[in-house]
Figure 1: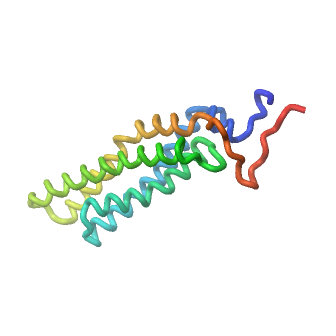
Figure 2 (figure 1 turned 30 degrees about the horizontal axis):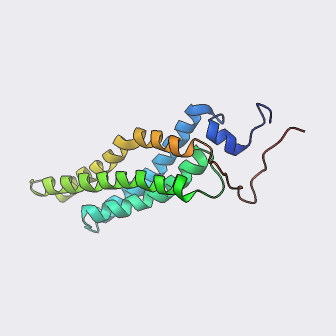
Figure 3 (figure 1 turned 90 degrees about the horizontal axis):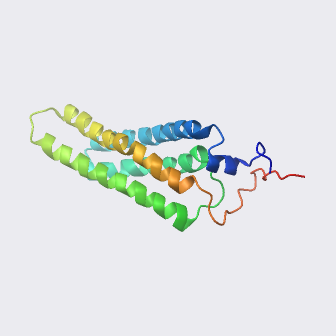
Length: 172
């Protein structure tokens, strides 16, 4: 294969499709989409529906975890085909469960502290929502580095892509 005739999967793994900067921008955009999904879900549950911070965190996390996985794997890192359960899915779940644990602990602590104060419910919802969002901001770079290790290298036995994917070009 020549230097400028690479498959899209190779480009995603090696970072040549827009380089590292392109991958970081795609990761940031995908994370932004996932964060909006999570935050809106968290605020709707915690605020008007008065769910506990733990319930709102778990459901909010789930609302962002699915688009995050898909966007990061396919768009930011260009991975296609069947994901390996042990090499991709389970490590990904471990990474995002860590974020969930931090978000649940932080929002529960913020809620407990703010419930003892004399602030309005609206301000409490805003501050606990900011805490939830802050957790994602704090772990943003760490997650990028972990995802880059997870998705940024070829799997030992890559599965063929979906039927509509273009085959890799080879030298004639």
